[in-house]
Length: 265
Image (cartoon, rainbow, N blue to C red; front, side):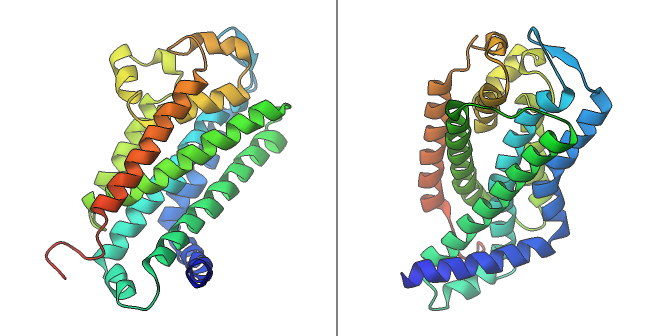
């Protein structure tokens, strides 16, 4: 219980540090919300997709939710852990009596709080500012919950593992650039069917495409399942792919995590 208590205390500290990082707050927390509002205004109140007519806000909402999940988990973890390793924070924490698990609990707490807050704001903006109708069945909300949970968990452990490849100086190129590229090819900003076939295959290797597809199954009418790459929502495959990434990311996190910069002890 002491480690858990310290983990909760660490979560509070992580949230305070995160709120003071203006760039991190903008590019990981606020960015999907602002993009949803921007696209909703630019593309207007009505657009047709897959034989169904919907508002631009309703069309882009699943993509923004999906991008937000990985931004608040993968990008936040990759950049913050890399920065803390570079500036010696991890080295100092490792020399304190605080159990290592408490540090990771603090990071998980940061992701959980920011991701849930972001999703709530996205849904609130879509509903109250742009009139999007939210799902009205328990089954759809259950799908939302497990896609969100698996996606956030995979992003958290993968971001922690990926931090070993980044540094505070190179984070923009090593972390942000690949995340931005994945958003463009995974059906976040464009209809996935409008993306060239070979890029669809590339995107299908990574979790963002499957998070986005899972979220489309929650918010889109069932008739639109026919325009997916597999002609269906493929929720079973979505769970399998995200589960594999989550498990693989956990293994990589355990194998690659370092408390110290290379060349130091």
